[in-house]
Amino acid sequence: MGGGIKVHGVPISTATMRVLATLYEKGLDFELVPVDMKAGAHKQEPLISLNPFGQIPALLDGDLTLFESRAITDYIADEYNNKGEKLLCQSCKKLKAITKVWLQVEGQQFDPIASKLAFERVFKGMLGMTTDPAAVEDLEAKLVKVLDIYEARLSKSPFLAGDCFTLADLHHLPIIYYLMGTDSKKLFESRPKVSEWIKKITARPSWVKVLNLQKQ
Amino acid sequence: MAGIKVFGNATSPSTRRVLLALHEKNLDFELVNIDLKDGEHKKEPFLSRNPFGKVPAFEDGDLKLFESRAITQYIAHRYESQGTNLLPADSKNPSHYAIMAIGMEVEAHQFDPVASKLVWEQVIKNFVGLTTDQAIVAEEEAKLAKVLDVYEARLKEFKYLAGETFTLTDLHHIPVVQYLLGTPTKKLFTERPRVNEWVAEVTKRPASQKILK
Image (cartoon, rainbow over all chains, first blue to last red; front, side, top):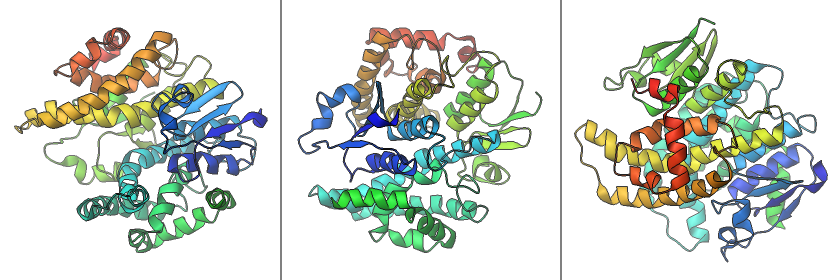
């Protein structure tokens, strides 16, 4: 079952980090198979057969091949439900439905803005491109509106879906981590409940392990 | 089963996504109209239902939800044994469920961002008296073509996107596909034989016809 998990990706990729964090939360063994992004390996065989959209990560578990990080994390949380940390509320159907709401919020409301901002602030620099200050200003103005809603939500419960840490919180980790290393961190730090939530989720041992992979 | 309410607009693709699921399941519900032109979705009391100010919001008894794709998943699970099954045949098998989940993510992250921009440029802008930007249309059509090439290959192997049966993965595409069929972008679907067949299949379903009324 768990012995054959392979992840094709790289430790700096936010989508790969999302999957790695989930594997660590579950205490699962896996092999991280590096992908030569600079050489465009993700757009060619053999990886294009694993993910026809030419993106990382892909995950292999036995003869199952998956891509799209949020489908992979959902699979891991479900298949290995009884191992490691609980990442989805199984017992209460209502809470499961509410977790799905906040999973969608991350994917539909937070990520489209925040990942563009991380691209401007962080990844453009890595690629030798120049940050566009007008784009940053525009994206930060949009992100602030989302974070105000998060602040209100997190004033009602310690985590986004309720009382427990779930995938809905975890999915935010990679982009928040990158933005906290830039001037955009002020948007998070100026909101007490958001700030508290970030401190909690980034302190999780599984997240620390993911960051350690980057150092290797 | 009384007590299902949808707060949305019958023309909105995301509202239609939820209505499709309800029709596929033959569930009774009330559609509470939210006047988008009047900005009703950006004010109370709607904001208490969805703080992001977007339709639809949803209620089933005392469970309140938003985000159309979370709502459809709730409906598919909660009413699994009613009407059309929108989950994979072996829904408790995580491996099978994961294949559908991939398709749902692909719709949300690869298809919809591009397809919705095309609906915005060619349908909504016209409706509110603005001019279509053909340069954007060309750019977005080039992206959509690449996505549909992947779909074409996929649909050569399987009847539907997640396998041999109709699932949420297919359903989530229908509202935006329906709008695009009324625009020149339709050609991107018709020039790919399997995609064309799939579009015809999913849009002729009774539920798909009901949401157009």
